Image 1 (cartoon, helix red, strand yellow):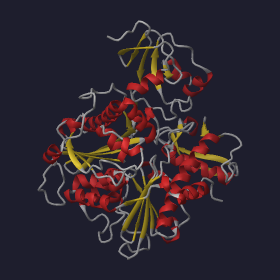
Image 2 (tube, one colour):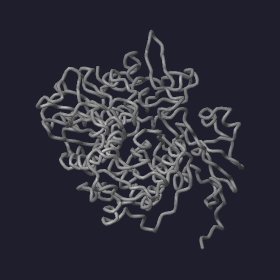
Image 3 (cartoon, one colour):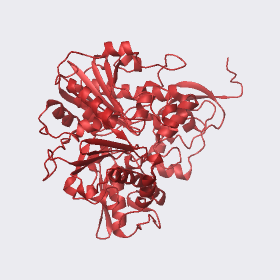
Image 4 (tube, one colour):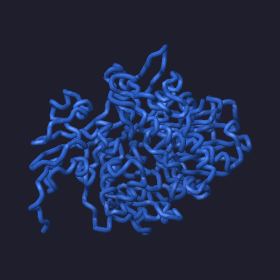
Length: 568
């Protein structure tokens, strides 16, 4: 038995545990609960809210400022400020966003794992039997009544549910693995330190909760979901299937599993236990299945298909709520030989792919989560209460808050607002091209950007832009010659291309050739769900792609230093 004589009893979500007196509550949550901590517990974001009961120390001035009197009066505290006390009790908040863009489910206890080594994905024989309708003709959807697609991103998870070919709901949430670090490297380290079961359990629970919420909102049961396509970067699929990520974190950085196989929901502890689950093929250790499906979702390589002509593409567009048919560029024939198109996923992993003369070349930049609203002083996802657009007009700031709220009620700023804000700071002269910001700036209420935030933006945009320039240099082409620049990623749908170009995130090209594709990775997963032929096409795309390791690229390092600065 474990000796608890020197420890105190503490309660989390109704469950007792024993810990040392004074242990930071956020560290306890990191061990077993997926509480949102975008700033990593640095007392900056005010997102790790919990209900607290017990003899906790009075809130500090900083905590009072982050929470406000009303929340404090309700018994709400921030986990990163609290220290465990005898018989103290905390309950993680359940947060639901306005509208159907996002529902951030509560942080339930991690489900049990089958054994100490972890649940393995289905064996080859099981995978083969799990594949639905193996003889189905191309064009046939892979479910009869209910089917779903999921995109597991490093920072956020998105899901969409279909009933007999019609989308009945989309939802998203923070990836709860962020409590182990905003980047994949931190999570790999946690996995190798013995936390692989926790990393798998909390992401499986997050996916399960989204699918359950979607099904219940549609008057269905998650058990009735027949087929699920789950895409994500290579690391996310490793964590989901609880594979050892050692090969991804050490030279020569070659994945020993690239997926592209079927399993069943029960093997992944999903709420849709009987569902056939497909994990699309990744391109490499650095570039995952999310880029494979994003190519499908955006039509990046398609030359002879009329955009929107096939049913799977129509379903994909319905899933994202935007036109992902980017095959025809304004004033440019998609069928013309020698075309060059560049796609960038403006997310934490910063994956980029160049399609040039029928070749696919790709890379990943480890940009960090700044453009997804995480890790910034006032950062948050694009949900009600977030500033999503900022303009500098006549010497003052004009903002738009999601949910059409008053500017003074803004709770934070999301990725599109950050890009607008930095562009506005450059236009106003308050921010120098070097990135120097003399003092913190407030856009509305208490929401704004600090010098530290600007540094995070510089790191993120420098990495993404350097990755783009490295691929272009590899193929000896100039950005001005691109037929189109495809912008993928959930928040990209709301981003101002003009602002992105102003801060130097994108090269200077005709703005009409910048195509916003939304969550193309999820759209591509939807295409696979609705067209048996897309499964083989996705695998073929992944197998033909060439991946550039930016870590060993001298060109990338040169470009990175250059594009850390803001364009004049």
